[in-house]
Amino acid sequence: MKKFIIRFIVFLIVGYAVGEIIVRSNKLTSDIPQRYVDDYGVQKYIPGQTGYYKGAKVPWTVNKFGWIGVSHLNNRPKRMSVIGDSYIENLMNSITCNQGYLLQNSNKNIDFFEAGRSGITFIEAMEITKRIDSLNFDKHLIYVSNGDFEESFSDTFRYEDRMQFDTEKNTLLPGNLKSPGLKKILYNTKFLYYLYSRFPLFVSKQNKGEVQEKATVKKEIFNAERFNKLFIYCQDNYDLDTIVLVFHPNTSDKIINFFSSKGMNTIILQEKANKTWDLSAGDGHWSCYGHEEASKQITLALKAFNF
Image (tube, rainbow, N blue to C red; front, top):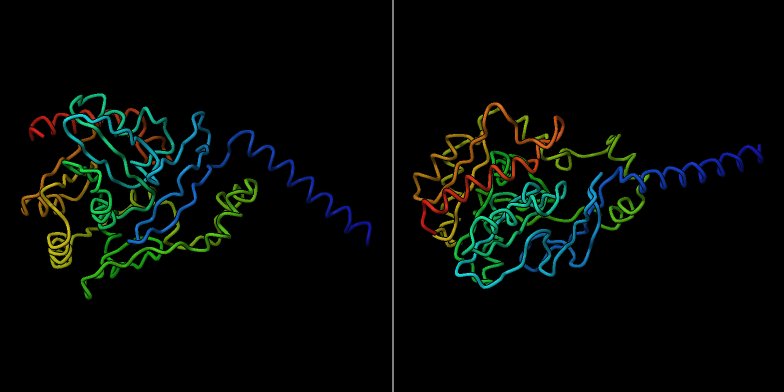
């Protein structure tokens, strides 16, 4: 019995070591940047981190501001931020496919600065505009879809790890980091993380993949009373004249019409029926083609606005 136990332990150690080597060498899992919550309740990444998205050849890097993406401000006449969730974070593509990178190449008079992070809700994006305003932006491009609004309301479902708006108390509820120490251990042991991500038996509702969740939301989530409360809060706390809402393809017409009726600047992205923007059949993030098409439409809109 003792020999069996020893052999079993040796087998587990060797098996784990082999699994770790295979997963790391083939980049079968993504490196996950570690977060912190700043003094204003906004979640950022710890500066200086670097790593690889699953299967990627080019690493991502967290800049000194706590974001991943374009952050070079070259003193062009105008300055705009690009804010959004994992679509803007864009770990799954080269930085040359980022919105900030593409827009900067198409708009020679404008510097672009990206602030993207998986899980950012609409209301957190609005809060970010206030917290980065010391960089003197002329406009903030906020990329949004149905899910970004739905997840902004705590009365729909309280996502503990995301900033949300409490319509009853008219206040913001900051997101909390869940077990950061355990997550750090899990993310650094690639083989265990690979098994965890492949067989997510204990993943709670709020930690499931946001892209798949958003892609399957078909129900109508617009509620005029809730959206009016949200808008009034934004009107009282943010400079709406600097905000441009960039609506993803297939965003609810009721949501778009609501914000347009309030006089906000909006850009409505359109996807051609014969060619998808999706990265793959199982991943609704935009491919490089999708990002290029989005940036072209936004560039035309910015010129029409005469920004």
